[in-house]
Length: 301
Image (cartoon, rainbow, N blue to C red; front, side, top):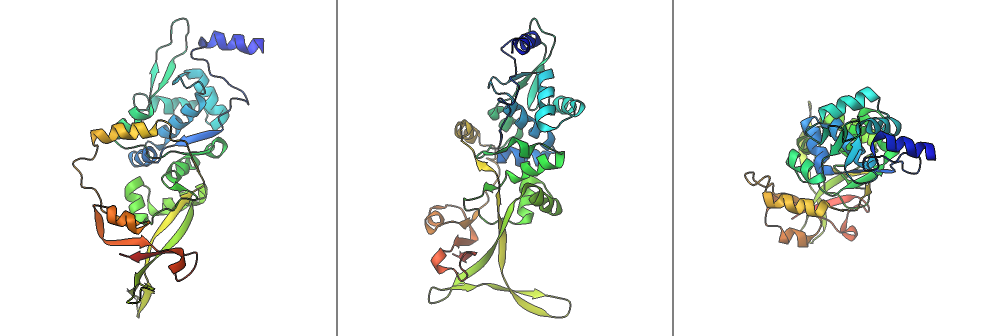
């Protein structure tokens, strides 16, 4: 015990010392869906994944890590090679963190991790509601980490998720359709189909059909909406997220862009309260009114 304490003091002082060992091993990684989607579109998913990991490694919460200890921890807990971790640290310097000169009395540079607000400002987006996954699930190959960044865009399993098409997902995350399907398998994303209905004169739900043209014939097919997706992540405490989202809303990142009208509503009350809604809006049907129990059916408003 005395030997390890002396070695830590020689490395650079208690203010920057990183506690290592099984007791201080990071158990969870906190992901922010807004940041993950923006990083995927910008091609900075590898750097953002390392930013998530550095925040988990920084058990003291001071936002500062010694460079050599950060390299050692990333290799021990998240399967990086020292060369890969160092290359990513250099690539993210000035974007997600700063690599500063060694403090007085030391010879090792210090990594200053940017705050959630500063990273959200750099990506010009809102963090969104955070989720957590187990650190051992996040470790592994680059594809595994990127899949979890993509999965963080979806709500955890349990809350009702609204339908979304593959094309809309590509616009939001920049991930192509085939790659989305690969990430679904890697991260274990659950996919549920949604069906469109309308009410007849008696108030009963009636399926909406559309005409499908084949090579030799045409036939009617029940209309399907986008799928609902949910991830295996856990809902995380909001922490500073509410305050950060509030500060960013005052700056109006997208004040010059038209807001997309809402199309899906979980209740009739939310439909009536919405000032901007799509001309073809759907309300989630009550369980007692659904044609097939357990299936997600949406009634056209």
